[in-house]
Length: 319
Ligand SMILES: Cc1cc2nc3c(=O)[nH]c(=O)nc-3n(C[C@H](O)[C@H](O)[C@H](O)COP(=O)(O)OP(=O)(O)OC[C@H]3O[C@@H](n4cnc5c(N)ncnc54)[C@H](O)[C@@H]3O)c2cc1C
Image (tube, rainbow, N blue to C red):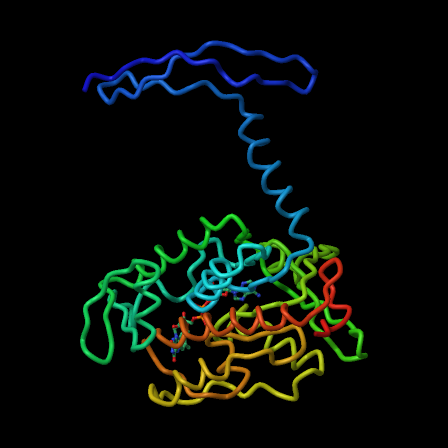
């Protein structure tokens, strides 16, 4: 079909001095050398991003659930939570520029991804194809799983994801029963969080929420963050540390052990193995999915019995 030029009314542009313009413009999708874009002002681009991003930050300063880390466990959790509870404000904080954690490849940097049954149900739910090998299934490329899951999570209207943002502390308060409770997260741009040793006075920001789900993966520069912070905050004696590889013990241990480890804080995925001292399972990802789903169910259970005011748990709902 021949390209068709269309004339449209440009959105009204208002400048800082109060002047506004509204003009006609031509656009043309022509790949023969005459492609014409609608005109734009640089300030329109800036404002389009700023107003949305900072409105989100303002609104999510109080969230219903914060998920820390957008790897396979955090994303499986976000999908389950967002699809079953569209009323919840779910905020995902991801330290990396690229969300997805370690689930862009399978073992030893190979592309196929192995998932043991019954976690294959989740693949059917999100619409990822696989080959059935009997007791397990294989997705042709781990990135197919992660990109599909990520796209579905981000499409939920109740999910906000802030990447390139690190959780650098937990809010810990005395709750209504006088117990120590994790009541939110302390955040900063990751580039700032990585430079506290070289620059001073770079204060963070906070998000208050009745439930925090930490899915920060293995111990590393940022990983296993909440588990390690529980130790340094005196809420956990010591890390269990990940044990040697045993697929048959490791995967059920992660899924069945997914829980609220301290009031207000649920651990999921490989961060839990660092907390509990359970075996690693190597490149089989069913446990990350199952643990994420279980973390979502645990969060719903906590919210069902909590009396929450302005993101703070102030009591228990009595029947
Ligand atoms: C040493 C090592 C051993 C491994 N062993 C296994 C194994 O036994 N079994 C297995 O399944 N996989 C293993 N893997 C691979 C991989 O880590 C996991 O398969 C899988 O990616 C873990 O999923 P996850 O969702 O728990 O964490 P990850 O995929 O690691 O995702 C964690 C996410 O949290 C983000 N994050 C971390 N800290 C913060 C913070 N402070 N604030 C905000 N975001 C943060 C990270 O950027 C990342 O995106 C191993 C990897 C390593 C490096």
